[in-house]
Image 1 (cartoon, rainbow, N blue to C red):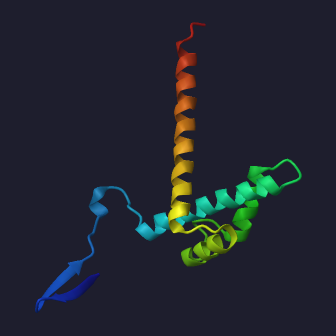
Image 2 (cartoon, rainbow, N blue to C red):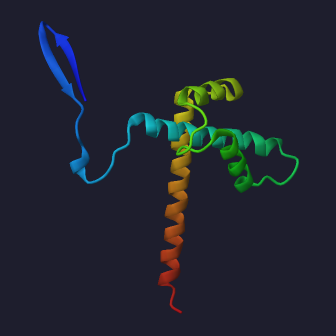
Image 3 (cartoon, helix red, strand yellow):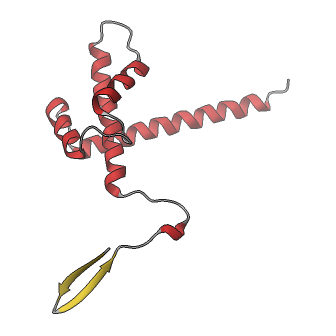
Length: 128
């Protein structure tokens, strides 16, 4: 794809960079953004559902129900704009707040993984 823009009476061609030689795929920013919003929304709505649940809350079942309602990042039912509108109406959250939720969630997961691997290493050091 080529786009032409004019600056100071000069035409400059902006070529989209072919990054296939990198050896790995870099998804478009909008794709990564959609995933972050999707998972933050799932977490935020899940916490509200858990607090309001009169029974024991089943996260696995909730995630299945969420996917039935919203689709998945790979099989979307709604656009990013629709997810953001939903988040604003139902949660009072904007894009930046959802991205922060996602960042914190990823950090908690990373901390959990680190503790899990550290515990495994300590078990390996114990003589049997």
